[in-house]
Image (cartoon, rainbow, N blue to C red; front, side):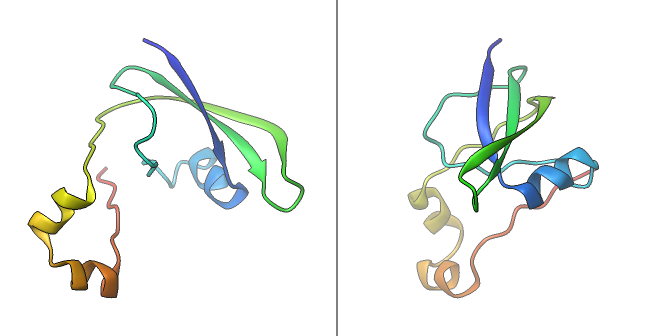
Length: 90
């Protein structure tokens, strides 16, 4: 198991902190797997500095997909028109 550190904008950090956000959507440009620890470090985009607040969460299920995968499920025009959403299940 490993620790992975990532920036989190204040609005999203606050939702993880209060428990209302139980997922994380990230670009798949790093390795992470179930059981790893995700360390979210609050980042202020206005000051371009970390605030000093951090949250550690154990990683559950990880789903990875590419744009080619998406186009199997939905037409490209529909993805462009409507966008995507992530739904957290409790």
